[in-house]
Length: 131
Image (cartoon, rainbow, N blue to C red):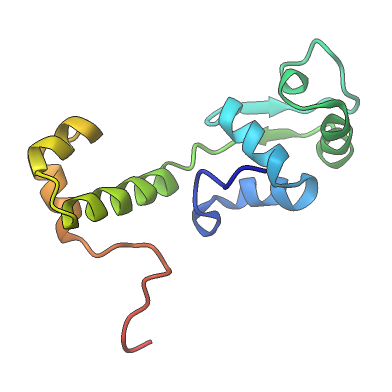
């Protein structure tokens, strides 16, 4: 499996539930293809369902066994995406990249870049000295 595109601790509960039941690869594939949508999960895999164009036959069987007959909301995980983007942006700014270049790279305004750089990183790996 490739490294996760988003920090696991920031993923919504629905995505973690899928990962716990079917594995991280299945969850990432579903998130990558269906984020923000709803999936009507059939009780048995079928070739005409878009879910099974994304999952292989073994993954499809496990997914149907676990969630068949359910309607699943696949969250977009925007907060996790923003946290990753903001952390990268802060690192680039700390390394000396000009704000105007960051604006172009991230398609944000000058003020948005300044605000993000002023904020403390919300990533939980940054522990306080007093924790």
